[in-house]
Image (cartoon, rainbow, N blue to C red):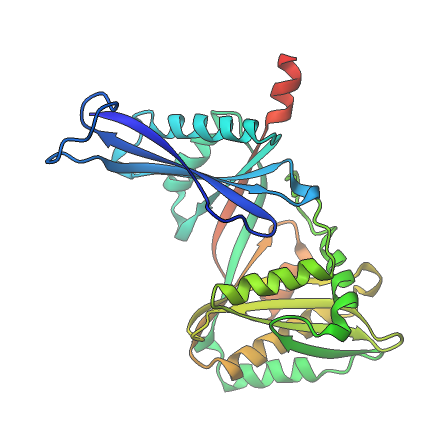
Length: 323
């Protein structure tokens, strides 16, 4: 048996990225001839690169690499990684990131993935904690508390909400409010620069809809001028079951320290529980260094489930040294 690496490409490009994929297979013989009928090739691993195409992130690639546990430590991961990094260089990428999860306290699995990547030039740059609010734990008293938080007066502000694509009359100001994410704590990770405009916020909503999911947004409005100064987004499975996922919560710097994030998120949770009674839970991921957002989630009853670490490798430095 020998190893064959087959490159694949995503047939359709998304609005801001596309993927390259490599499939690793064990094949009879030397891998150059046809497979033997009674001994077919079988997959043992894969690697994919998400290549961002918007201008502020055109230097980035996001790696996802997996090898079947029984086939590890046989050079398969190294071959896949070499292929992916070569693909990244060919596409002009200078930074590659990868996420390794500590799922349910599986430290050995994390240690294996992290050790594999760090031995090959990656370094840890950001740690996330995933938290979950189990809807079964939101009893009548907790629901009442959420409603009270959502009803708290915030002088000078009011809440508004919509499903799916932002209404036309709010589109411009909503796009500007997305700048609240520009200074989100990212530690040493290079996230690129995302330029939010009306076309982009509408494209995100369309992408969620095309996946068959539901996007619900709650926003805080400055009553002095009618502009949106903060938002929180929740994506729910189309059938209203399983776990919903918080996409992002942000408040523009000039309006922070007024409890708007907690206010908006409480209203988002309250609406989700009422509109989608079949939901199992709501999931959020937050950088460990994002203390204010972690405090909001803790106050609203979210419980940590696992952590994940982003590792990063700069290909541009390699190019500079060899030039």
